[in-house]
Picture 1 (spheres, rainbow, N blue to C red):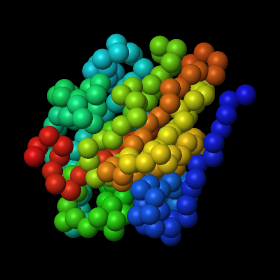
Picture 2: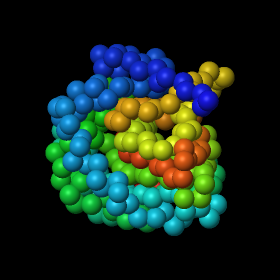
Picture 3: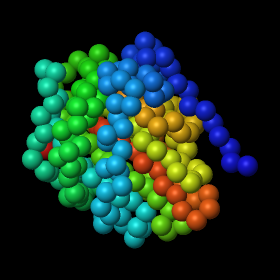
Picture 4: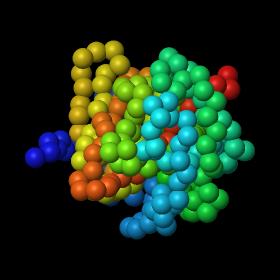
Length: 245
């Protein structure tokens, strides 16, 4: 039997309090839908794009288990503006495995960016970030991920427990299919306190204050012959895009 730890979800009205007091908050799908104001089924039009993610060719472990797309935006004054394709860069202090590399990923497709639910979601999370840490604008990086069991084992965070070097990180589970594992772990960056749980409901979300918590996801294994785990990761940084300042 595979151990399963339920996600410690909070009501939407408690999001700001949890983020402020605990450094992270988990929302159930209905709360994410309400936060974004998209209505039931509002995210459905985005789902097919996860079936069209190119291979991540930068994995230093030689793995073939990760596919992804990337895009960058400025969220300011209630508007979301996409910036031209740019590198994804992290210092080694935050990513010991892939830090210091200039990684250029295939862009998020125009159809996804143009979908009404996309901007509503990104901006709604930006508003939540601003309520916790007021900022005139947010530099947002969006990552569509598929981790699969092509290699028998898929690693959502091959770099291990880490911070991303931004202000806030949102991890949204898009789907899980035919897998076990993929447990989320969140640790206090300055103490022993930690929490482990499994995001398993589509469009549930973990929102974290990146300065206060460290996070990771455990490897996935197939139940049967093959499986995958799809996520959308959004990072928010007030000062500039990481590496541009």
